Image (cartoon, rainbow, N blue to C red):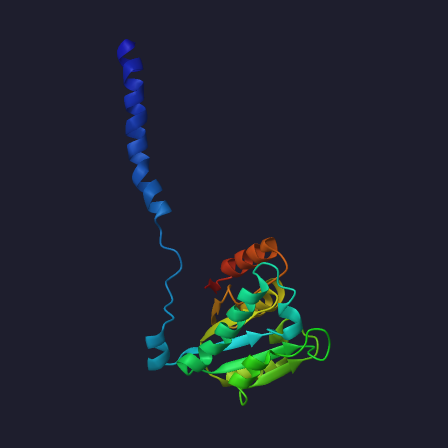
Amino acid sequence: RFLFSAMAPLNVLVGLFAILPAAVTAVMQPGPPFVRLNKDDAMIDAKQMVIVADLQEGLYQVVRDLDTVTYRNNMLAHSAIASLFNIPIVLTTSAETGPNGVLPKEIASMYPSAPLIRRNGEVDAWDNSEFRDAVRAQNKSQIILAGITTDVCTEFLALSLRAEGFTVFANTEASGTFTDKLARDANDRMKDGGVILQ
């Protein structure tokens, strides 16, 4: 009897070692495949394009998850990606004649001949046929996206693009919203939907 009680911890250890490899293997299963987005890819096969979604004068001032000056600089930096890497860009605004305002002049002047789709109320830009046509006309498979607000303009469009088969990189530093919680929740939903957060 003593021998059996003394061996009980040993039996537990043996049992643990028996299940440990399966537990480690389960934890170490690979996640989604890594999708490369870099300068060399852009120069070689130009699969990428940029979307600027509703980065408008009236909207960026309501962003509170980043400070206003930093956020504006991030918007401009996001917009400059297309020029820097010589890849296409599609610009879109929502209800720009109202309080949302127009694109900042710095963005508009970077791309005077790029498609600029002025939507009249579609919350998800993908619901606008002119915008869909402009994106599809670029014939690209990877989209670098930023918008205001993160939980509406970026999230809705990113998930719609994923549903259409695009690889989507959401620029979280150039997408802004009202609170940190809204940004986190939107980023979680996008990540769950296969959007790559950058």
